[in-house]
Length: 440
Image (cartoon, rainbow, N blue to C red; front, side, top):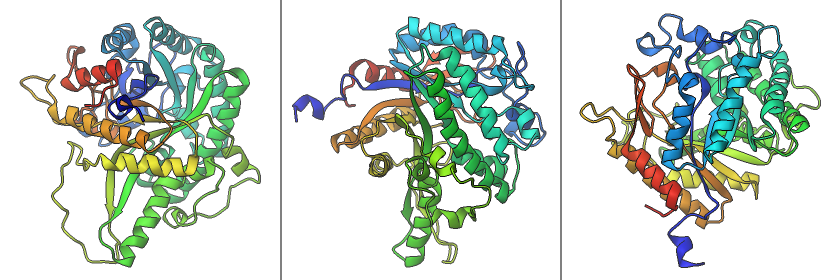
């Protein structure tokens, strides 16, 4: 292997940053946009920290040209964004042309700046009208997704080369329908299971729909993964870790790759086969062109049947998540063991840390977090993992779901009072990676 390969990423490796529509766009009720489940959830008292909403967020809807110019100054090669379903589709199922126009202009601006657009169709902002009709636990929502996917890909597919159907279906089903901490806020385990399956059906149907109107596009899906480590070598801890791993890391990946649902993970989901149509697994396993991998941390798993132990003193982010870069290498190896030569992208990786009030651009912890994970990603490449790109989460400080604006992930600081953007130290580091690809 050439010496240069040991110290750098391949020249064709993609460096980008990621965002999501509800977290940055604002303009929550402008130009025909319908209500989303996050509009309803964030306006429900007690649901979001400090009563925050995404009504304005980063005002990206009005400032997208400035934000794209900022990406250009950072030297990013790609930008992963999500399309707002309720901005594009009216409650009656017809297309809101003004909503599509926004993404049309965004894509053109990105391409004019030399940035490759990576579009995600569903990053959690379901139209409230569809939730009122049953939401993801209802099979009809998967068919509504097809109409939406065709509308977006039909308009943007001549220029967008990468479409992801869904972002983190695990979180949608688990947090939205089992725990209730995310929109729509339902704590209904059976509904969560139905939602998980119908999300997968929507993915498979969505892949087919996108290809029908944008045959040259690469189509994939984005899944979240968490490294699982047993707390001890006790057999109960080992068993609990296996169940947790199958539940979190295999439940969505395996059926997408044609392996069906994992048996151990079914114990966590309380799975049965009701509601599974004869050809569902075949639809879910529709071949994809790439897989997006979201990774932030690991979980140390303890069996509930064993006595509680005190948590070890480990390095943690502002979210309380353990900083564990080796887990990224481990997860990429695990995923590749299930996907073979399928190209992989790290579609989200980053960290939230408390704001430095004296200088918001200073974020040494985030820079260090990213540098260590970059080295872990390079280690995966050295081991032969077909990793093609890396998107930092997030380009901008934004609305962090149930946490509101209390946690900041941005490599660019946003002053929400003035909407002023400031590139952080981590942003300058990411810019250097995008321009040189040299290991830190």
